Amino acid sequence: MLSALILIPFIGAGLLAVLPNRFSSSQVKWVAIAIASLAFVVNIIVGYQFDPNQISFQFEEVIPWIDGIGFNYHLGIDGLSLSLLFLNSFLTVLALMSSDRDLPRPRLYYALMLLINVGVSGAFIAQDLLLFFLFYELEIIPLYLLIAIWGGKRRAYAATKFLIYTAVSGILILAAFLGIAFLSGANTFDYETLRSAGLPFEIQLVLLIALLIGFGIKIPVFPFHTWLPDAHVEASTPVSMLLAGVLLKLGTYGLLRFGLGLFLEAWSYLAPWLAVAAAISALYGASCAIAQQDMKKVVAYSSIGHMAFILLSLAATTRLSIIATICQTIAHGLISALLFFLVGVVYKKTGSRDVNQLRGLLNPERGLPVTGSLTILAAMASAGIPGMVGFVAEFLVFRGSFPIFPIPTLFCMVGTGLTAVYFLLMINRVFFGRLSDMVTYLPPVGWGDRVPAIALSIIIFILGIQPNWMVRWSEAQVGRLIAPETVAQVTVLNPKGD
Image (cartoon, rainbow, N blue to C red; front, side, top):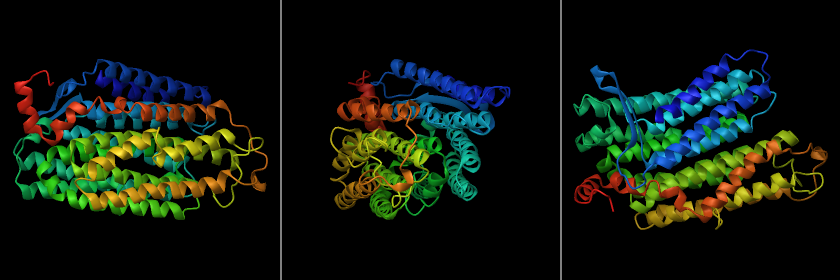
């Protein structure tokens, strides 16, 4: 079942690449949507058969690969990765739906989009450190090409900058993985085996710092963030949706699974510094967002601020804060994808993202009233208005982190308050007032530009009202992650895990 999540989009990407030229761009698009939807259906089947009360990995597949170094094709899934798999499959379908019908070189474009799905899904279910690294690196080239070929005017610069930063990230992560495998003498890269490697504290500290910088670039955390605004501004709307909604989550998942999971002792030592870094990053992202004139840059810097909340909850390392990490990861993925999609619709219809040029787009007759209303909804969700998933996630982050790190948590709370400020400034300028002369006659917004936004909005409301659907899959694994010895004893005494 897990291999199917990888093979379906991988084989689909190969089929798209060799489709005859007589297929139009629109036809290739629908073939890609069908392939991604099939993978999503398999994901639903996996979720239906998943047992949330089981603390060990499920649906495991182990195939020996390179015995000399202990490198195996080992897949497995638990509650920490299941929800992220759902997010990846769902957003991939919506990103394909939001792609333009008349793209140049459509077969290559949609094949690359499916390859990103392969890399992300594989990283979330890999239980071998080298296998995770291969999937982690797999998404770099597709994303580089998607920005470099179908991006904006400065696409070459943005794509190259993304490639350099991500390459440095991969080098640091690989060095840490090789270090833990060889210094422990385990002669394997199996995740469960290396969890009990028992390395000295000093070695743990060095390896963890390498992972923190490597995954910190991917999140991204200040000061490793500079590639993200450039990549978002030059990337097309579907690519921005996947970049913010899914690809950044590889960084938080990596810190949760490998940073916290493999180096709990060293993590506890560095946790206060991580909380301070989260507070700085949250305030920096919010402050930069206020100063931006490009709508896409506003949303990009808001992502930097909100991803810092995840680092804060990870630093606290309590049961509630780890659950909050999962909630905030999913919430940010949904909300940021919605915001980037809506900004893309505005740019598609008006030809501009400049907040100083656009105004009055909420005009019911000649403006974009539905797009404007959904943008206001998405901004409210990002600012943590009750009734939507953003409120639940941020409340849990602050509630779980405040007893451990009160001062950094207060600074992050200021950051979420500033979210309302910069989104209010953007919405007030772009959507209210008299319709700008430069956008007096706008083409109508069809259902193709509404369905992804409506689908995301519905999910944001549903998970805001019923947040248990986000966390029920992972509650059993949280205790095992932060206190493995205690959970092991409980499992022996009570195999049912009650």
